[in-house]
Image 1 (cartoon, rainbow, N blue to C red):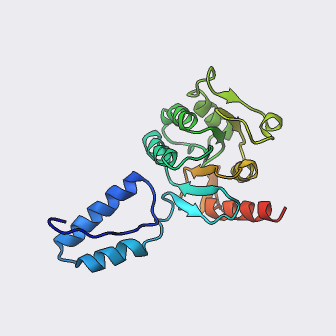
Image 2: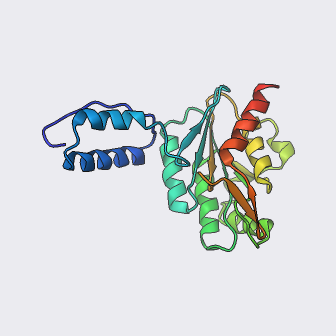
Length: 222
């Protein structure tokens, strides 16, 4: 805003959100919205549904849900989370069925490049075999650098630069939360604001935020 400065605080994280805020502020200023109103609007926005949306957690680690379902979007989100990394990044994601197969290995490569632990699971498999989709994702992972773990090897929660396969999405989210330790960051990617999962031709209720919240509650009650 030419010649005018205002100090604002935002609950949104990541450089891409800073860019979005600046663009929105510039547009508002062009429409002659006052600086006070712009500041109030920015500070009132706590989150954008499904876009690096933070899930409340009292467990000492952070949980985010994001809609990123392409390699470039996933990379952008993970690069932003790396800026806040204190310990590990644990990423849970899958790829949709009956969609572009070419992006799947790219997603696998990207997730394991920026994450310490990656849990590959189902998204909306639709009419495809979920395990076939996962195999396509796995093809992009550098097996020479990234270790594939079974549940028993993964159980201590301390492994880094590794991945595992948990086909059932609810179980994958629960696994990530159960393995998380203080100062870890969990990213649950791919579905964001969606409140359903499509398996075959059946659409059933499924919300990453709700599932994560239930898993956090269970962990807190142990």
